[in-house]
Image 1 (tube, rainbow, N blue to C red):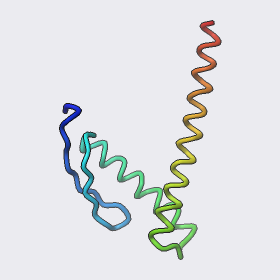
Image 2: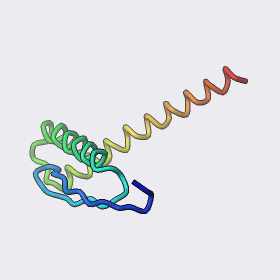
Image 3: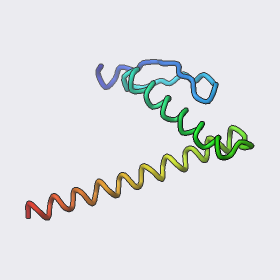
Image 4: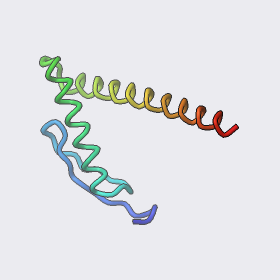
Amino acid sequence: MTDQEKTRITVEIHKKMYTIVGTESPNHVQQIARLVDEKMHEIQKSNVYLDTTRLAVLTAVNTMNDYIKLKEEYETLLSLIEEERG
């Protein structure tokens, strides 16, 4: 698939259907949707009275927290590699 080719894929997240348009492969989009759905269900288990909007925001906050931690770990590893080469 070239950078300009866009695909449409419909996925289910938290019992709602969403059409995603982008350049990622359908398998990649499905995997992301599945992970978002799983995270929403995980958060909802411990917060059963959250409405969908609050649940979505908490899911986004949790996901960004995980992303930042991984990014920091990655940068630390890159620094260690550079020190060993240096």
